[in-house]
Amino acid sequence: MMMRFVLDCDTGSDDAIAIFAAVGHPRLELAAVTTVNGNVALEHVTDNTLRALDLVGADVPVHEGAARPLVRPDLPVPRRLLNEHSDLQQNTLDLPATRSTAREGHAAPFLVDFFMDPANADATLVATGPLTNIALALALEPRLAERIGRLVLMGGAHGNGNVTAAAEFNFWADPEAAEAVLSSGIREVVVVPLDATHSAPLTAADCDGLAALGTPGAVAAVALIRHRIEHDQASGESVPSSPVHDPMCVAYLVRPDLFTETVEAHVSVETAGARTLGQLLVDTRPWRTEPANATVALRASGEVYREFLREALA
Image (cartoon, rainbow, N blue to C red; front, side):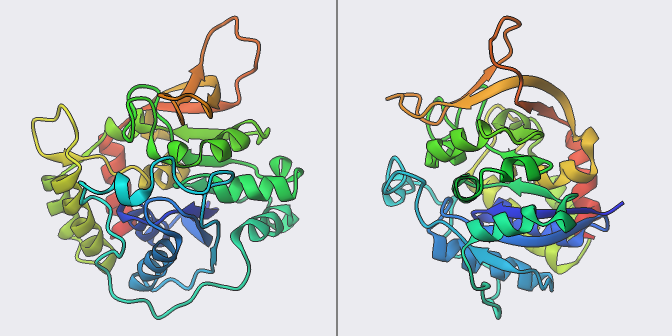
């Protein structure tokens, strides 16, 4: 059974790997990509997205979206200051220059049109960046929440954050959008936070195995993963490794056994805290007043993740 989906992303290195996997896996059909301000500025996100698709020979429509957060003029800390002492995020990925261009029309109305069309009732929405485009689409058409059958998103942290002690980058970058999406009533939401992605990091040995596949997607993915290992070492690991977050959302579509520990909870996002802005709140209290609105992944199987990547990049 083919799993058809739209990818909303802010293409840095792990989003690019998610694109390679989405195009390469025999049971995945990437219907479209929408781009959003996040890891890098929007023009770089769109360029990186087109480069990734061109590399693996995919003629997939790309629609450019929001260049800034939903209500804020910029990230809570401007990107130039945020990345001042980090080499993890590259404005332009080391991929061949694109030959393609984005389609006409903003991502938000495209998402409305796509998911309101009954022909796309079986499609999933996967989000691996800030949720600005999806929040805008829901504001344009509130019925959209009833028409998105499933949303799988990378964001948040039940334990420690990465950009701050409390918050993961995607939710911190646009907390108002994240809160709007999670409270919109989409009937099936799967949240993939740092807890899950950090539980199954990739190593240099994993890179060696993927490199042996020899495909353009595998070779490019290995270079990006090695860069992450060099600049984003997973904490507490004795062997050099790095979490590769975003492809997990794509992997879950065909390998629901990827997540070995999950919890049904009411989730929300802090939008006003001075020290907790963007924090994912996972309320599992039996006496909570709000019903569960998401499944939150807490741990992932490294074996299943590696199996997925090998199959997708081969």
